[in-house]
Length: 324
Image (cartoon, rainbow, N blue to C red; front, side, top):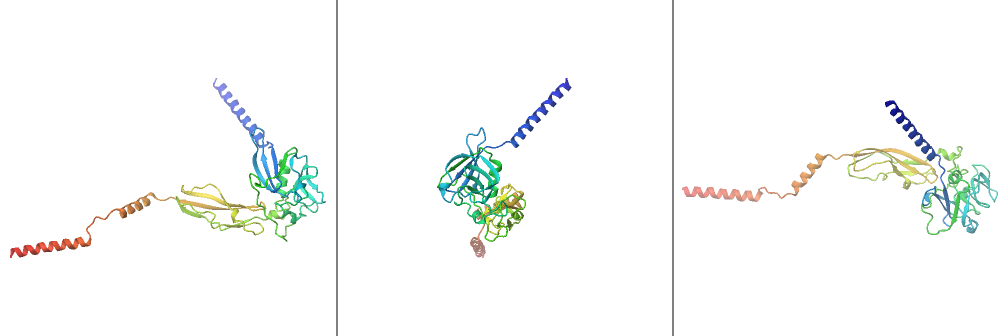
């Protein structure tokens, strides 16, 4: 009987493990459903997550784009992605990476290249991202066009609309331009191609040191921190602190400064925050001293001593006179 119970428990555990493993595998391999919405007048793309069972689509990520220089050449309406190409020939003879066809000749793709080569980027066109510039297509940085190419399958809904008030629920990302004459300017800085020379560069964070403070005393952790992007531009306002800490809880916290520049390159520098415990005895002594300072003084002052001495002297002198 005992062996039978053990076997039943063993089988139950195996079944439970199997169900958990299957669910985990399903979650890891689930294909999400996205909606692409393009604000034509603000040159901003917002990706919405719209998985089955969700009550409404949720803003997921945003991208800065370029729509048509002649705005009417980027059509308004609802469309679906019908075709994909890793490289596509564009209407003016240039080439685009990670092309997703929206309608007719209108595609979502990278900034154009003069040739079908990753090192032939049209830098001037890249630096127009965020403003109208194309012949009708929706241009993106290589990393953004690739994300749509990889994650938004054929049949994905694409909505092109106008909203002059709001770029989108997630805002319009601030992206960096390529400096004129920069040595790697033939490449898109965000291109994931392993031969991209931009891959060897990263931002620099300066001023990182360990920080000590007393319990209950908060400090500005980024006050003395500066940072520059891969082209040397100031990006200190992008630095953030990664890690959990509490100024009210004594201890040592292993943290790091993290920054991501406008080219999607990141850097991190570790530092330690020490929150010192304030001793209770010291606190009690300080409170006692303050309490004593606040209490009224009740001792005999100098004037009272003089009067007392004079009275005593007068009394003694009077006794001496009477005896005589």
